[in-house]
Image (cartoon, rainbow, N blue to C red):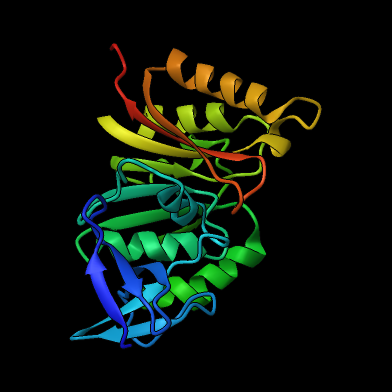
Length: 234
């Protein structure tokens, strides 16, 4: 059996790959052909190259496979990525938004940022690596334009509040957010379900309409992905 690649109807820029053994995986079209980012398999099909997207390494991939109803990342979008690390997921975002889009990658730790620059951003002109603390968005406000979407994946106790503070400066009204809540990073003494409720309440209080909560087990333990739209009253 030969490899087959088809677009996923609900998710622009995401593809379903049927491998030689009949198993199915998801992928994005490689914006930097010939280069992988984290050891993922590259698939050549017809006139394009695709990168398999590992749900055990990427929470967006996990959310798609766990029933995410829509992905608010599209061709040409401007995306603010809080907690970009070495670029595993950010590189797939880069694939989806294409050359007309842009992803602003905020990362606090110098070592993963260096990997992001050398292994990913160097080959992808639609990515800007920024060494900064997501808790202080005013410090990088001069580097980031208004965005269509914010993705937040940070190991901080105040995840929702940090996202809110960034949204007030950078997110267009009607824009979307995806928040990967790490329950154990917020409060190890509370049940994950309590933590999720508390973080959701912070989002709702600040003008976000919650569209979906996706639990990411078995790919990530005690994690949930929140999909919400920014509809502030003012």
